[in-house]
Length: 408
Ligand SMILES: Cc1ncc(COP(=O)(O)O)c(C=O)c1O
Image (cartoon, rainbow, N blue to C red; front, side, top):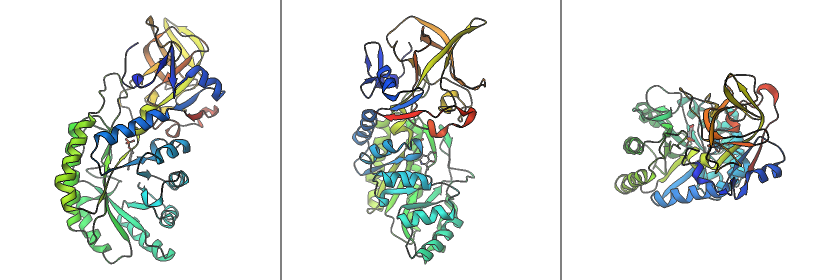
């Protein structure tokens, strides 16, 4: 079987893949049904520890709840990271329920409704303002509630970060406020009753190129320092975004985190600390914290041969794990790493297509993949399922039951 760095994170006991130390066939019995998602808490903790060991002290880690909002996962991370980034009132509730203090929760995203903004102001979380209109509504809401909204301003930089799977900064964007418009907005807000904390920038996600991330970090810091100079309030918060990618596909190389850590260290020492000594500096990460720690486990319900091609038909599919089918933002479909859970050491392979149970040719989990010979009842595992899995998938499509999620 071809090796993939994410597969190597998991233990293999005998011939069996294990998650959280439990062989999957046994975990499947415990869960009681397939398909299911299993997230490994020790891998999540190890990832946070690795980040802490490589990034400079003083960089705060914020977990982007959108990556995996399972309450147990958020609760686990709440004990490990410094903050949570949320994108809706529901995610805010999840983070607060998990015990993250409101002062360490930030709320970003375009199109926040007035109801959501009111909830966020009342909760006391930091609202990352994404438009002048949102700023004006926050002032009104603050006056109405008699609470000073805690706010930061999300900046849309005047440059783009190349190499990101998804780009959310530079050029025209629905995200953030164009950098050139920030100084005049800050002037307009100078007399407003807002507890202004600082700035946020998030330019893109899924970037595996350390050199590009380092260049973007340096440019972002320079931009934010320029904007801080025109800010009527002291800057107490700088959220530098993230975008750290994980190796989804066979040819992807893991991100060189040490290079990013070195650049961040230099930026902290030479630029941020001397100019903004009061600022809490954060990076916000989703998939890098949880993506590789999760697997999607399905069971083969049929094995058939059609005109020479072998199909393994499993009881899951794109309705649970859209991203693995290639239909969540991939331009050219490539396979996520995949394995047969109880045949991890078999070396004799055959070429098969692993398809889901939905009535559409889009429901493809592995196209022409080399796997050990597997049959009905075997468990097929799709890796890289810890982020943007279940909640980023069309679960209602075709009316199959929802999968269980476990944190082990
Ligand atoms: C504002 C913001 N923060 C954080 C993230 C998390 O990105 P990732 O999971 O790639 O780290 C995103 C992703 O869309 C985002 O929009």
